[in-house]
Image (cartoon, rainbow, N blue to C red; front, side, top):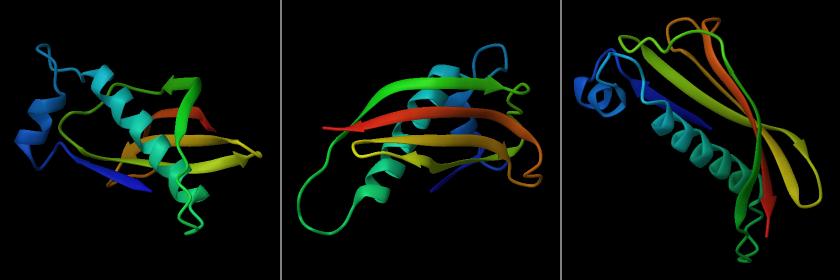
Length: 115
């Protein structure tokens, strides 16, 4: 699953995520990361049987900030399961520049648990 941040092209979106000093509102990014991890978990576990599955965030295992968030570039946040247990999933998220996927800004691992 992919989320696009058009910071470079859309000033309205940029203004929702920028701090007074030009940096990123990291709490807002964390909210988005948690939401994306939940969406990845639900998408992975959905088997169309009509039985609702709820996921909660058990822990955020590691957040690595590789560099400052460039608020003038378009970014991509991508998530995928890297481990699946009987009732839990380890979801790895990464944020990188859309024009240069090798320019990784942040990575994190979320452990989601079904209840």
